[in-house]
Length: 161
Image 1: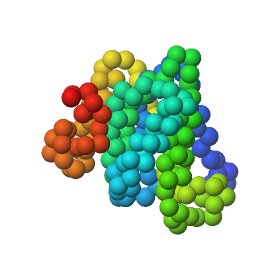
Image 2 (image 1 turned 60 degrees about the horizontal axis):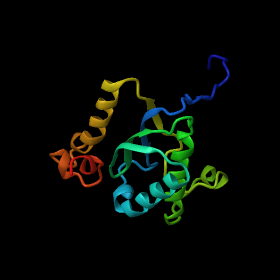
Image 3 (image 1 turned 30 degrees about the vertical axis):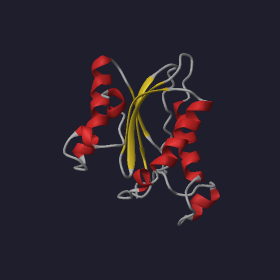
Image 4 (image 1 turned 135 degrees about the horizontal axis):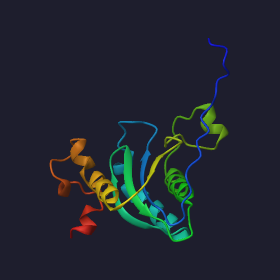
C-alpha cells in the first residue's frame, strides 16, 4: 500500500446543447441475448422516451448484449444522459426480476444494465460518418452476420430501404 487514499472516479460528462453523440449502452451480463430477445420492449422504451424527450436517431444498432447509436439532440438541449437513463429504466420495468446484489436493491435497480455508458461527442463530418459506419458494421465485426444488410436490428434498413 502506498498510503494514498483510494480515489473514486468522479467523471463529469460534457454538456453541449444540440450535440451529436455516439453512445454505447451495455447490459450487465455480457454474452446475454436479452436485447434482441426483447427487441419489442426495447423499441417501446425508446419510443416512449423519445415522446417525452425528443432527439434524432442518426444511426442505431442493437446487438444481443449492447447497442451503439448516434443521436442528435435538439438545439438548446444537452440532456443525453437523462435520455439514456429513461430508456434503460423503461426497458428494465418490462423485465422479470432476476438476481440482484445488495447494491441493486439499494438503488432500486434490476441489475440488467451496466450502470454507466460510453459517449463520444461527434467532432466533424468524417467523425460522424465513421461512427455511423461503426454502428452498421458492428454485427459483422462480432461475426453475427456476414453482411451489414443481414442484421435485422439496425437503422441501416431505414436508411437503405
